[in-house]
Image 1 (cartoon, rainbow, N blue to C red):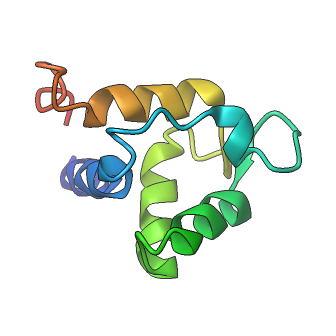
Image 2 (image 1 turned 90 degrees about the horizontal axis):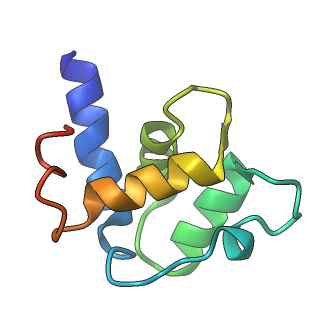
Length: 94
């Protein structure tokens, strides 16, 4: 349980910069295969200067809740909702 809480916290940090943005799934899915790969996510976060590769990877792992190795659109949306400071339940979900 502690591991999940820690990863959840990292996910919030990883998405914190995009909380004010409406990042489109299709923008991150650069190869248009229907999922965001680790490479796509880490490349995006590091290219913006928002995270080191290690921090981006931690964020990716936290968002990929089913541990499939890819982020689905549903997982990305859930992470956005969880990181939204306007969402009263965001702290309760962690």
